[in-house]
Length: 255
Image (cartoon, rainbow, N blue to C red; front, side):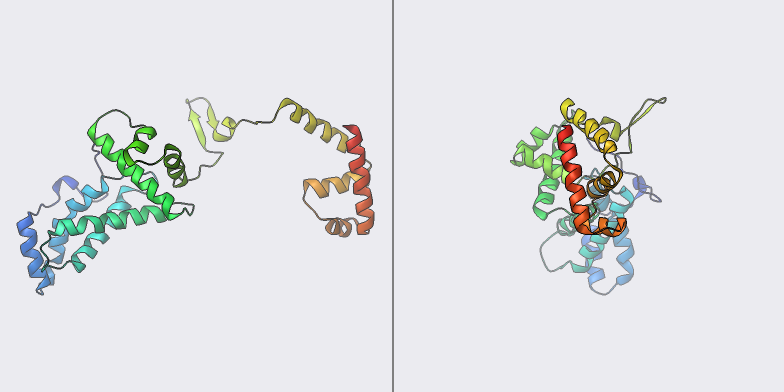
């Protein structure tokens, strides 16, 4: 379904209209040196940029930004258009505008993703637009995959790849009284035995002699090397190694 796009500072319903014939005449005059007509020509083709922006649905960037980028594509099209070719300006400008918008969206993602994956993602986005335009009900990823003839899992992976990362401390649900964070919905897949082992290990570490406990905590909880521990505790690396082995033997016996 079509969506209304609101652009800050521009009343889109009052954008000037330019017919194909008017566009052709003004283009010839501009290319023949009447550069003062450029602004009027660009304003007359703003609706073309707006129609391209309406194809995209994204939370990553605002429609204001997409419109400005699309306008850059329109200006590039005007600068590079050859009036000697038997081609309508809109036919030449549309790929230029879309290219600028897509490039901007690609570069706006937080993580770098391979070109092939991005291409699949944008094929999927365009397919969703086509399918939604043809009907009112929700389009599934299975239907999108069938539309572009790409395996379902590849489509899912590509769309996930261009999605912005979400903080685990963002709100996942809020009913007005209680807020549930994303982290609250992440389950711990550890089995009951694994959890009991963790508790037992923690208890047994506390029972170790002071030096052995310090070494285990530094070595396995803080990721220190034996050399770093020897410097921190003012003892030789051989002593650290011996005490570490003793501590591990005690822990193994506890299990």
